[in-house]
Length: 150
Image (cartoon, rainbow, N blue to C red; front, side, top):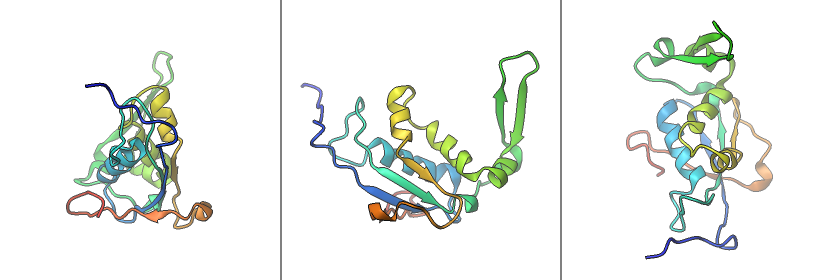
């Protein structure tokens, strides 16, 4: 069997809007990464970007379970000796909620140019409003029990 490769004319991109109010960071990030990658479509091909655009609002109200916000750290290294810095996720969620969610989704996408192309279709906003109303996004409701789009 030959590898299926969709033509550019076959790829139709939709816009989805997700409300992150009260959602769990990792659970929501997996669903958003799945839509960005295009795994929900029958024309999915792992070597092509067939995914849709996703707008995430209320990123400041996202939560982490089991006290992970206080226990878990984000590490960064400057490349110099002694250049390791660490920040608690509670501080990151308070100061940079958009970047925290974007990093969680980025880790779930393919590495390299394909993953960067997919990540460009993610728009994250800490408040309830966004400037993409002209694209008329459809709501992507994620069920909190099954963590799947309903």
